[in-house]
Structures are given as structure tokens and as C-alpha cells.
Length: 391
Image 1: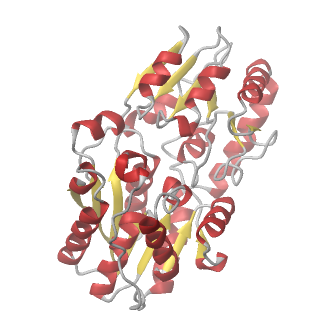
Image 2: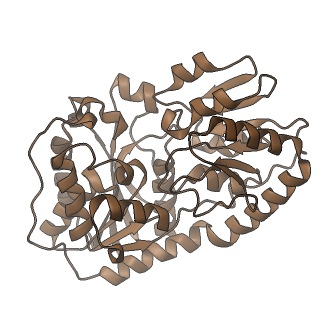
């Protein structure tokens, strides 16, 4: 099958979704598909400073087409970028299926391109795209509802995230197919070295207050060592809040990420919301016990006192107590990491998840997006136009 995968704003430095895209392409190639990725990226100084930015890297066996998000960089003109994506997909074919990552703008662009090519469009609703887009203005609300109602298949990572999108956008639950996140369990494995005493905490991912990094720094005991890996919009506030035992590793290339997990003994993700957390899965596969939150997108793979410790998002006192319990109790750490490691290998390995996505391609083959919808064009005041890196 000839697959066009459309990816939104590629962040090679820190984005779980760019890692997801690269891994999925690799698996689709292994399944025998002819794969092209058309991916947006930030090329401006502001975007690359916050997210790493830059064109998407080559993926062996796949064709990769990078498109700079010029509209987004020019005042949040997502419609301009949507038109560019449509033109690229239509002009780079032929294809048998379009698979878009994120509902807006890539999902809407994928649907319009698929309609012109008379092929099906599969859309993955992921991360902040599902949590926030549509709560910002009527144009983006209509865009998300159009995608959710008219795409030939909707993929979403977990039940808690699906339920949030259903409630917020008024979409029928049956429109969604649950396809969980995935991790390369061959690349991410427990370190050969013995755990450190006392244990070192690790935060890896986007340095963003929505991921709970500022809560973690507030909850951290003065004598506790913490490694912070990644960059993001709140890197400078995080540096300002950090004590002397916090070390910032900065931008880390994906090839070096497994070694980063080997530098920690406990993984901490005090996030407020996820679509499905790639970093949690990587930490599970790396054999690290995890402290996280009862957030959407986390509770579907972590259970309190079973394969992790969970606190309410934003509960700094609860987070401080969970960190103290985890760092003081070696038996607890051993039990949690063993349960998580067995589960991630059985449930979230990439070949299994890629097979679920491949089955969706087969299911929708021969269909097309419906004819009775249009691309919303009205430009309204919107917080994502004012700060497009948050979308």
C-alpha cells in the first residue's frame, strides 16, 4: 500500500510525537508499505530555540518531504500551512491512503487531499491537539468537529483521552479506534549498571509547565539530585526555579536518549495531560520506576502502587511525598519497575501497535472522506494564533 503520513511541526529535539512518527514510518516500511512523510517544521529562530525545530530527518526506506510552517511563523496563519500541505500531498502521490498525525491543521489537510485524490484518510488525535484545539475559537472548534465527524478512521491512544475529546467536542464515542502508544523495546532496555544510592531522579521531555516541570522543581527536596533532559517554552523559568542539585542536559538527540534513561534511577512525569505518554513508555522499557499523575493519557498505562506511583496533577505536596517514598524504599522501586517492564514488553512494543494501525488501513481501503463538508476559513481571535507554539 502507498501511504502518505502527514506530520505536524516536527521537533527532532524533544517531541514525543516526532519520535512516534519516525518509529511508525520504520514499522510501516517493515510491513512492506511504500511510505512518504510530508512533515511541517519550525525553521525560525523562535521556533528552533524553543523546540529544536529544523527539517525532519531521513527515515530509512521512506521518502521524507519537509515543509517549513511559514504561515504559523507569520502570526499563526495555520490556514496558509494547511493549503501548502494539501498541495504537497496531492502533488507527491499517487497514494492509497493518507494518515494524518493531529486533527488540526494536518488532519484537515489530509482529509482535503484525500478527497481530491479519492482515497481514504486516517487521522490520529494526539496530545494537546485533542486537549485544547477547539477550546480557543469557533474556527478551530469547527475544524476539529469536521475532522472527527468526516475522517474515514479516527485513532486515539487511550480511553481516558477519547472520553475527554468526546465530551469536549460532542463526537460519538464509536467514531474512535483505540490504538495505544508504542515504544521500541529493543532500543530502550534496562541499564547494565547497578542503581545509584541514593537514587537520581530524571525528567525527560518538553520543558513545559503543562508537563509539570515547575511542580517538580517546587516539590524537590534540597538535597535530591535531579537531571532535566530536553528544552521547551519554560526552560528559563525552570532554570530560575532550580536548586544546586538540578542539572540541565539540554537538547538530546533521539539516538542518545536511551543513554539518558541510564543516568536516572527514578523517572518523574508530573504531567497535567497526555494523549499517551511516550516518555512514560520509554521509562517503563528502560526499567525505571515511575512517579507520575492521575492525568488523562497516563492512567491508561500506569496504576498507583502497581506499576508506578500516581498523584493528582498539580498536587505539589502529594508529589513531594511520592518522591520521598520512592527514593527511600528500594523494594518498592524494584517491584514497580519489574511490573512495568513486563507490561510494556507485552503490550506496547512497536510491532504489535503498528499491526493495529495497518489493520485500519485495510479496513478503510476503497473509501473516501465524505463530500458534504468544507474547510473552515474564518480568522477569529485565538490564543493559538497569538502563541502558535502552544498549539
